[in-house]
Length: 138
Image 1 (cartoon, rainbow, N blue to C red):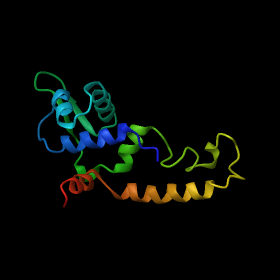
Image 2 (image 1 turned 90 degrees about the horizontal axis):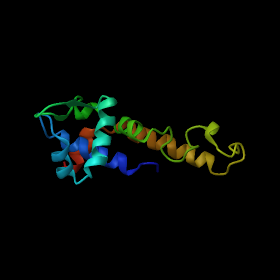
Image 3 (image 1 turned 135 degrees about the vertical axis):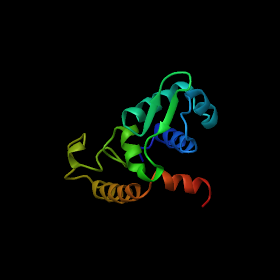
């Protein structure tokens, strides 16, 4: 799986932001999530650039969700944060990505492709609202 700490932290930050109706500054969000502030700031910049959140400047500035949690698909968060086309392995979504140009004789390619397809279906199904619900045990 190609999920990194960036995606995990991003989901954590988005879940926390969903609790607020006003902008939350990076210091507060860092304390609430226990995500290092410099790393969190980079994630928030990326989320803002990808139009998941809005950035507000000034003394009452911070970050807010601009989409409803039910409109934020987990696959979209993954794609925005990971900047990768494959969920499982670099070549699992496209034979052309085989760095050794051996996709025609690769024994694992069909298996990785099947995993890629199944995981994609799952990730397209779930949203941030689902992650929030699961966190609360509902």
